[in-house]
Length: 153
Ligand code: HEC
Image (tube, rainbow, N blue to C red; front, top):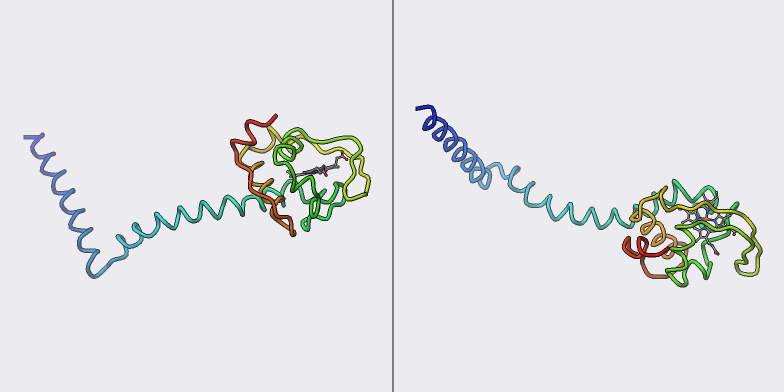
């Protein structure tokens, strides 16, 4: 008695939700339409997030020293810096492990210290921010993936 009542109840729920679905195809399309379009919209958002996340990571963690325009202050400029747009593995290595000692950027000397970012930032954040600095302020170099960041010492 109990069991069949449960099954009946379940079936009633199922058919009523099916009915709700097919109803919404008609007059009130809200439910079905939202469900159908929100899936691809989400996929798109994720893609946009990956690149705009680089800007967010940069603004939070790097712009104090390198400035939002990449022209540098405490840190050297990243805009127009051939190291930044050069060998991706070298850039990953620098950002992962930090940098200290004398360097020269476009003929100007710097001798400061940048902390290591590995451990502070996730590999995907590091990938996003490196992709960002390699493709901003006129820099034109290819993206870097989390897998590359994870496998580069
Ligand atoms: C506390 C200041 C500071 C912060 C914050 C900082 N950096 Fe640096 N960065 C430096 C300094 C200083 C150097 C140069 C180190 C030296 O003189 O050896 C440097 C060097 C670099 C270089 C190498 C440039 C070259 O020509 O070799 C890259 C790439 C870089 N930083 C990227 C980043 C990224 C990306 C972030 C954010 C995740 C970041 N930095 C955050 C201070 C900073």
